[in-house]
Length: 82
Image (tube, rainbow, N blue to C red; front, side):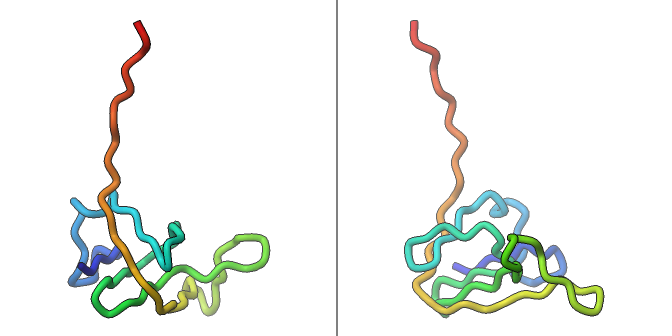
């Protein structure tokens, strides 16, 4: 599966925006594109303080290869104890 968070991208699907993306077993929170078959993600580049890196008015992104897993993010209701 391949998914993208950018509405301009051909792999964008609003119904899948609630997905969790894992790279080598670690959840990725700043993912822009994830591709399970090709084995890479593209995520926002962050500085040492965890802030987005902006250059020439564009948010920088980096590609990272590895084992990619995309799972749906289910919201479950928790029942209060009786």
